[in-house]
Image 1 (cartoon, protein in one colour):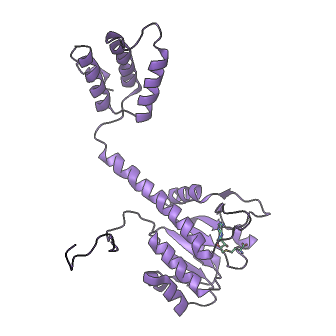
Image 2: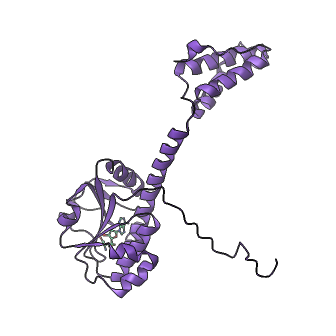
Image 3: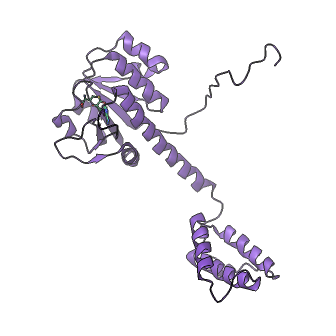
Length: 270
Ligand code: SAH
């Protein structure tokens, strides 16, 4: 390698591009956090995953140099954090609240895993603000605080050692929120990219019948026992969720194999 040229394997590549994910309606609420370093580490975990709304209910020490240093480049989240006196204040404008709990409690409250929970939280953002409430380092969330939540989320950790560090737990939950949000972005993108509508049941049935006739014509299918092959082909194509154009391409291929011309029947198009 010529001197002065950077080895791309050694260089840390930092991509900077606009975040497609919008998690601005999801807030993280930290209850009575005792270690300021944890607040900083939570801010970092949040910013990495595209979350920005941090609420602190009576933190023991904040602002604090330990919070700033653990936040690293996420100190903007600390600067814009809402410091409030009560959980009620932090949740006032939220339509959906999830409490993170390391223990499965004696009070029976609906509990979900992080993946299910992230999906439900994102669905709720269609209606308004949503909150993820994280408990104290020493004692978690009180029963009164849990009762403010629509659901609890539990990270299914090692049952013999299930309590994660506050920022580590926030990281796992924020990651699931990001994955759920990315899935939503993908669904929107593929919906807008779609150039043909999905084939109707009648069109797909027409294809299967065409398969049966054409495969018999070319002697691939024994008409005495067509069942297994046809079922397998149905399973294969049903998995693919064919669109109208794909049905036409396949029928064109079948016609060509039969030595015929395939005329797209507009009547089929519903
Ligand atoms: N000792 C406390 C746990 C404190 S950990 C207790 O036994 O409850 C601090 C916070 O991190 C918890 O209140 C919870 O909000 C979150 N947390 C830690 N581990 C978790 C887990 N396995 N699942 C969900 N949240 C967890």
